[in-house]
Length: 312
Image (cartoon, rainbow, N blue to C red; front, side):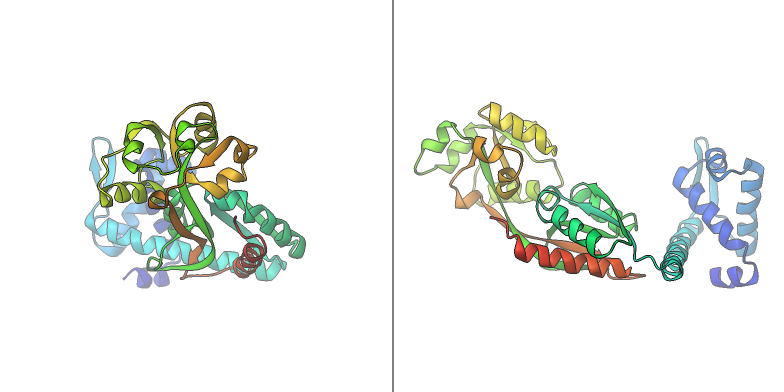
């Protein structure tokens, strides 16, 4: 039905994009302002869609508008059409201008401080037509952005099986373990009793991250009571400074710590295989829609860089 409407009247594609804006904001007035329209003009566009499809798309509420069941179904199709349109424009622009492309990269902490800078330097020298936009985050924020096409690739922890619609490429292994300041009393113990860790105060990773999930599950598996959280943060500079200046313990990637400023000399990992998490790092891209040639070149350079700069 939607494709038939679009075929009969090309202006309807614009109306679909207007509907997506209304759905995102939930208010006709503010959506009209963002679109550069008057509210009556926007209301007319939505009414035209409703007339063409013969179903109500919006429901008025005291706070604004919400999508009806028909509206929710239509916006899912409209989002796919808009993404396909953006992909087509992007592909044609790259072909017509001779540019290799613009890449939007999302990255976790470790790869941002290890292979990513070196890989970017090689990529830009080898392919001067490429431009890069790099943002940081964690798995809770990066992968939804990748799915929503706000990012082209994510450098972060990868599991044994990618989620549907994603493709993963392994780069290297990471080692996450307990860290303390160099002079911490626990560093003097030859054999670490895990139960003593519950008596210490901790800086714990942010919730809903892979490291926090692993640590919580590991505590349950070995029968240790929950750790005493003094600080919870996903901000690495704050975490490292606090560990260096206090007796707080943290669960952090040692390769990341050892490569950050002078913290490799100020901090030390605790010898505890039971609380050491070895996991894979890699690059994840979408496995559907248009894939820019620049992405494949980026992956090629990343893989070569990872092989030549192994993490200690």
